Image (cartoon, rainbow, N blue to C red):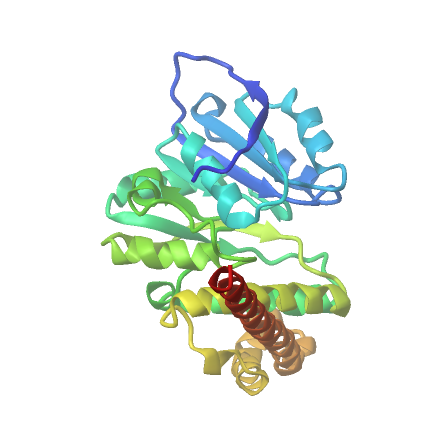
Length: 329
C-alpha cells in the first residue's frame, strides 16, 4: 500500500526536458548537517537540467524541512519535496522510487557531501554497464575528524579497498546509484522492515533478479559521529533494525561475524592496512573500535529480539482471551 506522503514543494525548470538522473534525499532530523549535502548537490558539474532532486522528510522534529524549503529557490534543477509523519527509511525511499522520472536514482543522505563530479561519474558508469543494477561509490577520507570519527571513517575506507567484497556483500544506499528499472522490477523497498537494513534487503533482491552489483570510481564524504555516545547509539540502532532483516533473510549476513570478538579480530586485521594508508599510530586502535561497535550492534540486535518475543507473547495472550470471549458469548 503506497505511503501517504504530502507534496509540499514542486519546482519545474523545463517541463519539456526529462531528467536523466534523480537524486533521492531521505532525511529525518538532519538540520545540523543537511546544508552541506544540499550545497554539494547544487555544485554538481553534471547538466543541471538533467537532474531531478526529490527530498523526503520523514517526520523531522527539527528545522530540516524548513531548511530544505529555503534552499529550493537556489537550485536550478527540478525539485520535489515530500513530507509525512515518521514512517522509516523503507517507506521514505519508496516515495522517491514511485515519483522518480530519471533513469537512475542516486541516494544522498543528510550527512553526506558529494564531490563536484560524483553524479557525472555515477551516470557514466551505469550507461557503460547496462547489466549493473546498483553501483556503489567509494568512501572519501576526511581530514577534519577527531579520533572517533577518524577510526569510523577508516573502517569504511579499508573495507572499500577490497573490491571483491562488493560482489558478495549487499551495499548500503549512501552514494550509490540505482537503475530505476531494476528497483521497480523487484517492487521497491520493503515497507515492513523496522529501522535499518532496507538497503541490504533491496540489494539482495536486485542481485537475485539477475542484475549485477558493482563499485564505481566515484567517491563521497560522510560526516561521521565524533563521540563514543553517538557511535554507540548508531550501532545499537543498526543492530535493532538488522534483527528484523535477519529474521526475514538469514543469508544476507553471518551473525557470527557481528560478535564483539569477531569485531576485534577484524579490526586487528584491518589495522595494518590502515596504518600503511595513513601512517598514523591511532590506526592500531581499530580492534577496540570494532569491538565497541559490534558490542553496540549486538546489544541492539538482542533488544529487538526480546522486544519482538515479548510482543508476540502479548499478541497470543490477547488472541486467546478474545477467542474465549467469543466462545462463551
